[in-house]
Length: 93
Length: 404
Image 1 (cartoon, helix red, strand yellow):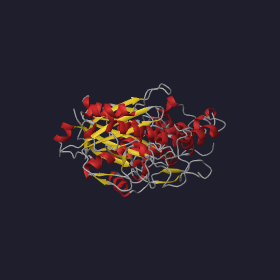
Image 2 (cartoon, each protein chain N blue to C red):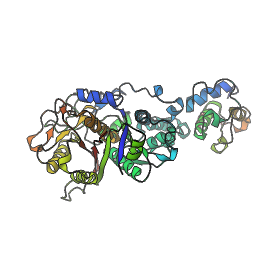
Image 3 (cartoon, rainbow over the protein chains, first blue to last red):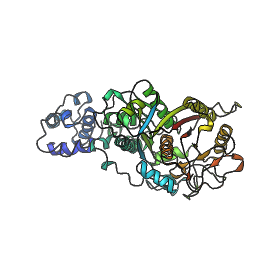
Image 4 (cartoon, one colour):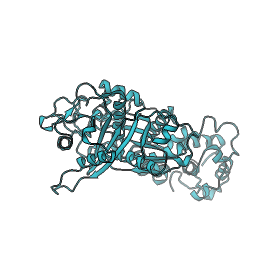
């Protein structure tokens, strides 16, 4: 686990995991927009959460994914996670 | 109740769209070639009917790409075509007045193959959440329904290579129960290495490496079939609804039936002829009313013989024009029957019965009048489409001209 996750990292990850909802949907300041409004459903976020665990070693349980309504909430969950909750081996549970 | 076909969508190895497919079919242009998705040089079967230039990203929103197998992408593109062809603009029908009934035989093979690789190489958490639905038989119905907000009855039928006709038959029944518009048909693709060996395991595929000789339905040299990918999606509408909105009508789905073969060794005949008889009865038509039969044409000699016997028995020796245009596409599993329906409807429109690919010598004892070499100009008011699926499925649909 290295540098904190940025909004650009999350943008790239969302598009890689779940595709672009429409061109430029994730342009500008989208950090506080609701995922539903951005066009991402719970499955899209579960898929993204799995890739976040691979890359940052932070596990977001499926039942918590639904509570993260905005990109900022995801960033806070990843960057604010106490070190103890990080898995020791990214990519494995 | 009458169900009219008002829109055609085609993704076929020899034509991306109903009109290109029909032009290729009349011209005898084949879509069969050496499978190009991976190196097949060491496989016992090497030819397939492939969509050469299918670019899903050019047709579908990016959001759909990570969650769909190639077969579902093809189904979505065919559905878009059919709805555009039928001029179904958003808002023309309310959401609960539109249903979706599709057939699928293979599921999302290439997608699942990729996710299985992740499973055994990286562990369960590496597997895409979209695997949960991208693999399964109902996914084309679901994705078409979601994309076009069609909240009416939705179903999926699986009957190997006969299922596409079953879907259209059930779509007609759905219209009879009060849903004015149903999107229906079938699309399959399983040309990744795992899908390929699964297909080879049937033992019915042609080992020929010559695209002109590999799949010769009803020919004395028949040696199995070439598999393909793609299919067709149709817009089916209640006749009164179609008339009121002034829709262009390709024809009527006038009759449908399905039967199942008796157990091997029972001594009872296969069920194909009975399916044809029941579909004609359902259409209120007699064998003498039929101008063309779009046969299943498996290319497996004993199955060709059995089908020829059924057709000869029902229509008399040489009693009706028979054709197998799928000789030019390969067999498309759930897509085969619906694509034959498209060909039958366009034969009705243009008064042309297409030829049967490279088939040249039909054994005399088959006693069928197979259209060979070149298309035949003929008035086609009623056509019978037949399809069989491995393990005993038989389905038949009657299409009929609708006076404009």
